[in-house]
Amino acid sequence: MQLFLDTANQAEVEAAVRMGVISGVTTNPSLVAKESGDYLARSKYFCQLVNGPISVEAIALDYEGMLKEARELAAIDERIVVKLPLTEDALAAINVLSKEGIKTNATLIFSANQALLAARCGATYVSPFVGRLNDIGQDGMTLIEEIKTIFVQFGIKSQIIAASIRSPRQVTEAALIGADIATVPFKILQQMIAHPQTDLGIAKFAADWQKRQ
Ligand code: E4P
Image 1: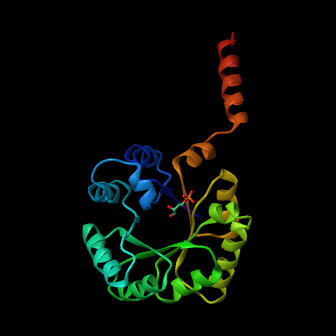
Image 2 (image 1 turned 180 degrees about the vertical axis):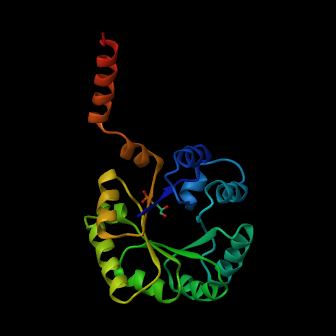
Image 3 (image 1 turned 135 degrees about the horizontal axis):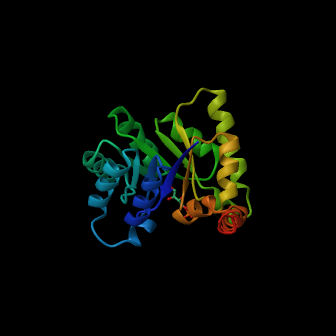
């Protein structure tokens, strides 16, 4: 399973690229709103830095507006993936964009049917939101499992991005199920690195080394 970083923050992307652990970046309007500066220029920089897919969400919600914005975003760099929230207009837009060779990420997916529809109209990626489903008392990981089963059963090529990840354990679970990608906030990436036994082990090795004859 590949890891994408779920952030619009430049320092976080640079740190993750330095470690060599991420294959792409996903952003959304809330993440972009937290940062200052020109987000389109930053998205282009991320494309060069990561050399992988960078998802940028269209703000327009109507069909014509989505198409216009998607084409403008895609013109920034061939690695830009246009994120569209799952609506009837978005499905129609993805249908056209996929035929133009523009990569899309169907976002805000909360059911297997939504994922199936997005895949059928040609979405490159589908993004089921695990954490937000758990927030309302449902099981986000079961959704990943259902989508995976359906996509395998019918040879569907759209890639599954496990999104809205809130804990390192969810990354492991998404990988075990066979999600193609998990997109993780930088904080979760740091939590994936850390283990108390690693810290204790480092401290003990250092102490033993100091005591050597
Ligand atoms: C995914 O593409 C979204 O940007 C993201 O995972 C949403 O996560 P949240 O539910 O923690 O905001």
